[in-house]
Length: 214
Image 1 (tube, rainbow, N blue to C red):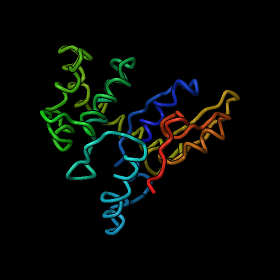
Image 2 (cartoon, rainbow, N blue to C red):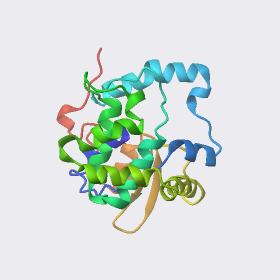
Image 3 (cartoon, helix red, strand yellow):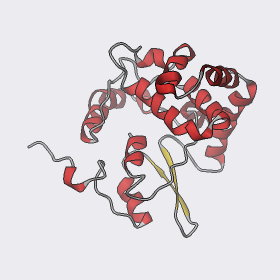
Image 4 (tube, one colour):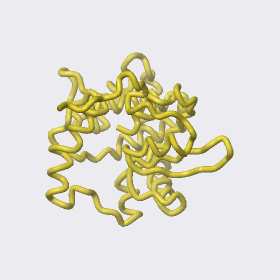
């Protein structure tokens, strides 16, 4: 959700979006945090009520996975490999994985299968994003000790040095050189205030601001 809203505000805020593939499980473990679903009623509420309503309010098309959460470590390893191999394609690759997970077409595998490396060639080759040779290079890199250790070590560093304890973890830098971290997909009004930017709602257009159903 946060990723979608950030992309909506790239142009209005003149923002440079720098993506850093990280593994949520590694951050949670390093921070000694526990997933919300470990509290039974919270998990039922989040998956059955809170998240579906948030998607509706943010006007994000999605297909909620039958099983959630789902381990995305292999996607993160692939994106971390892409960050090294073709950094200029990292955002489009992130978009491709996001769509495969949250917006699969009827003919596409569900999110539970999309997260598996066997699905990656089809995802990454769509619309000519990566060639067969590049996909082979990504596959080799993501399975290497180098990339596996980078994902693990960088996630731990984000906790130890960046203070992270979960996702989305958004690090914002201002023109005056000051930097501040924000947690959650519901902090954009605060981010706008801190940046001195105008917040026009989650759609980045006040004329289309979601209205409550009375």
